[in-house]
Image (cartoon, rainbow, N blue to C red):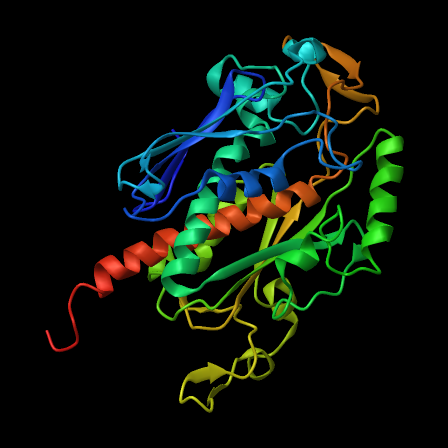
Length: 366
């Protein structure tokens, strides 16, 4: 029913924005992986609300509880269940949304599909659902790092028309976390923060682009045709709330080049490894990783729920005006960074297990 993601490393999220809590069940995690809840909490703290002056003022500690699948600090190979209980809920802030649709939100479409919906904070359509993804992504990141050395770093590339200059080959987590907007360009970041504050004071919202790089990716991850690595990455990040666009490598800019300009020519490096001179393919060719860095971008729209009054209709179709209440991010980009990283990690981890299962079973001599 659309609540599960992945094949061998499979996650199912649950919970609503103002319900008892939200969480995730992970099935397929390999046994004997060392797990410390503090590692998962660190990722959730990057995602949680109320962490800065440019995020929603909702105050949640997002404290993670591991309910199953981990014993004496190691994964068992059985389903891992993790729960974060909701504390700072204010369902009364959303009473008007019970009968009135917010423009560009999921209110009307949920009603159209199910005939009813949890209108408290958006229920299942709220970005609070991503807590489960980020918690699962923390475990996926650890598997990737420990098994093959993959490192995943996301950052804010652009807020509206302000674009930072970031080198995906060298950017690190410390640089990303050095400011509240999570843009490693220290000249552009203060301008982004100022713009978000200005928009928030106007009761409005803005969007932008998150860029993410996966480094030290081995060759061979991904499958032909329907399960191409970039296709699953696209599905993963485009399943995030407010996502509206996906690019990998040269993306849409590549359409302006000729084949001779766009092709990544091959060479052999000093270690005898086949490499590409450029990386316009974004680390993936034919749906399979080629050993270069995977670089992708995700476009996020402006937050749908805003304080500015807008035209809308009620469930009965009566035209009305709505100035939404509640607590919302004026810009989702800073908190979207760990979400994008999590989805990239889930896809990469799933494909790593699938690759090892199919291609690592028989030795060359077999």
